[in-house]
Length: 530
Picture 1: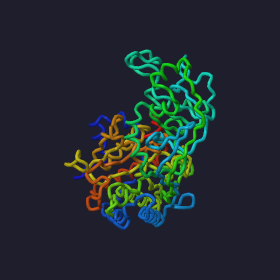
Picture 2: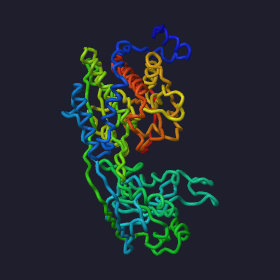
Picture 3: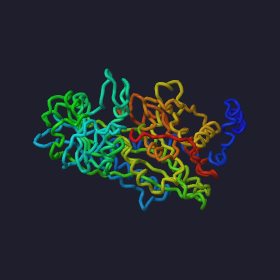
């Protein structure tokens, strides 16, 4: 005999001590939604995924023909369902470029320096050609009585500085007054922000650790990189920044030794601190990339609430084909989330055609460029179809079709990440829906603030969360075929995937139809970069 769901739910509430926490979060609308949730089936998910993750899609790498073919497939599905195009199209163009740094020359005064051997661009900041006079500014610090910029006008100039700060562990640091360095050493971006505020046009940092940094950075800088065709800032400032060794600084200036520099600079007894003209030329190969997010809209039926947007997302790109021609199908990553998005859209449209559409609008987006750095979702969050303040939440599905080693004995689980980081209401709705209708094990392992995997920052929901839009990231964990050729449709647990899809649908139904908008009642300070 099947226990009445409401009796079961009450029992679970009492047994788990939820009675106080969920009392204000009584589910208002989900009872009418279960018939539509049940249209999300394992068979339909399998049929869709065997198309999206087939060899014909060639691994769906961003900018490649397989990605464009997948985008057409998704747009066709949205149109067939009856979702409305957004801004006149089912495609949101995402301007991308591929660039590779090939080499460069840095001239300071009469000294010519060569890329890799003598200097490197600071990672994470776009550095273009620069022409400016160069001036030495010591450590580049202003802190209390210590002022490396005293009586210097650096506006429009390149400032040349040494890393670290005055003093050392043995004799003590001047600024901290103890054996531990100050924030100027712990957070190098402080120096860049200060130089920027004083009008400098570029920075050259001489570091005693240049050889170690070079061994780590050269492979990274030499890779072909895809990015949005816009300026991307480094931490705190986008001021062009270059790294050199202390030996190169001595070569440029003719100074005797770094010990001599550190001794004479505070007393302003260094000669040649005006270093002449600095000129930088970098050679890059740059190609534009054609890519799109795919979106469709189900308008809300309530005139007072339809301007508010509930967003369901996935990413449809993967990693493509390797040098040997082996196709990486990406069935789980993130074919599973993308076909779950399609099934959620179909369930919503079936309900709407039966006269049971949502009060709030529901926006479905399949993002491009997630594997290249969350590029499609970053572009959307910077160029949203609707004002960001109208976005109620993002429910993001990424890798929901397999199981990991921690759940080898039971695949009826899902990792939830981020549900409680901005809105306690969203978190409580999610738990209540699951307890009343789905019954999956909700695993919050990767939701921990100190999660070393940092999954919270590694999928598209993050570009909503950083704008204080509540999110839930649905995830089933990493497995042996992650980013490998073995991530194929035959290994997917379709019944498990269907249950996660129903959990997403029922949660979105409750959020889209509640009288009150989700409250953002948890404060998070998100880092400026991942």
